[in-house]
Amino acid sequence: MMGKLWANWRQRSLRERRLMLVLLSTVMAAGLWLMVWQPLQQAIANQQQRQQQLRLQWRQLQQISPQPAVNGDLRQLLEKTIAEQGLTLRGTTEQQGQIRVELAVANAEDVLRWLDQVESRGGIRVMELQLQSSLPPDGRVRAGTLLLERQ
Image (cartoon, rainbow, N blue to C red):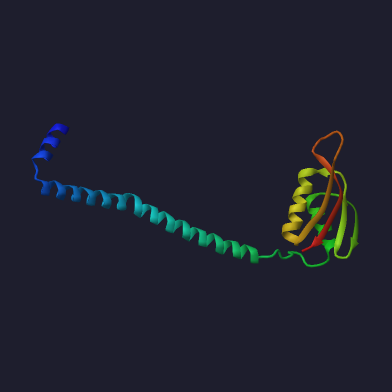
C-alpha cells in the first residue's frame, strides 16, 4: 500500500506535490485547532469562571460573622447547652467577658459535641481547653479548665 502511495506521489508534478503538502498542512492545522486548541481554551475559560465563583463565595464567607443564637448572659447559655448535652457542670468563674468552666467526668464525644454547639450556636470561642482522660481509659474525660468568651 505504501509503495503504491509513494509511486503515485512520484508521478505527480512538483506543483501538485507542493499543493498537496499545503493542503495536508492546512488540514492538520485545522484538526489541531479543533481537537486541541479549542478544548484547551474552553477548559481554561471554565476554570477561570469557577475561580471567580469561588472567590466570590470566599468573600461572602469572610463577611459572615457568627451571630449568637441565644440572647442573654454567657452563664445562662452555657448552663442551657450543658444540660441539653447531658453534661454536669462542676463550677464556673466569670471575669471580664470570659468564663472558666469545669465539667464533671463525661464522654469525650459529648464534651466535643457540646463545644461545637456552643461555638456554632452561641457565638462563643474556646480560648483554652484542658482535658484529662479518666482511669482506666474508657473514652471519658474530665474538662478541667475551659476558658470561653463571646466573639
